[in-house]
Length: 355
Image (cartoon, rainbow, N blue to C red):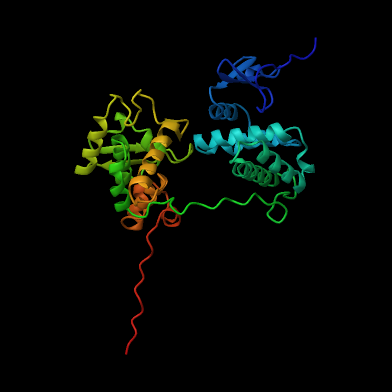
């Protein structure tokens, strides 16, 4: 009898993986069942990030030290590099690698040349949704570029085919001049144009500086006698740092107001139907639409320029002294706060000149 054929929806997945009945599964090679609880088909997880974590925990990382194809190189990257990133980043990364695998998964890594990168870049741009092609192509090619960097580190190849002198991305589009809130007063003055729950969301963000994912994940379980206790979710393998925002009158008022919002739920922020504004570590279309409508109202009825949700956290990082701001944002180093979040200029005393 011939070898059992692995069937199912497994396009773009690692070797011997398939998607079946809502879960990702691994078809165990004959003779290795003992390593997989005696099963011939092992369930890895319901989403790709979970599946890769399970798979990485079950096998020795770096099983294949004789990598030849891009598919093999991607498998090692997904086992060694991807699991250390946040769930949202993992999901993005896995989807990008699925695209790369579908294009060049069976190709030899060693024979890849800059002209092949340009061919890939242009093909991705042409196949993408109109208006997003160049941005998406750059995103995929950035990941491929890093894949080659790891290939050099692992001794798969000796020379990088996509260094800047050999390959160029599409030019990045010009960024809007109204993408950042310039002051807390600006945000405060804009609140009256937002719907009630968004007003409270922004007030809580101004008080805490929490990331969007942490704010939208808050539940009654985060409420303690001492204050609001939040387990930060920057990366999967972070220090699991907790922040306790101690009660003050304003924080108490905002949290009480949030808890009175309809509909009744253990979650701080939900739609009228009780659905969360976050899924797989990212805000949903419902949240983004509400934010966009608010910004459109500002543009139509006020002189306040539009600003991004993220920039509110930057404002919070610019308040107080550097160490206090860093602690509030949950940074392990003040260098991160200084580099990415301090918007206010450093104060310098002019030199005093004697007459």
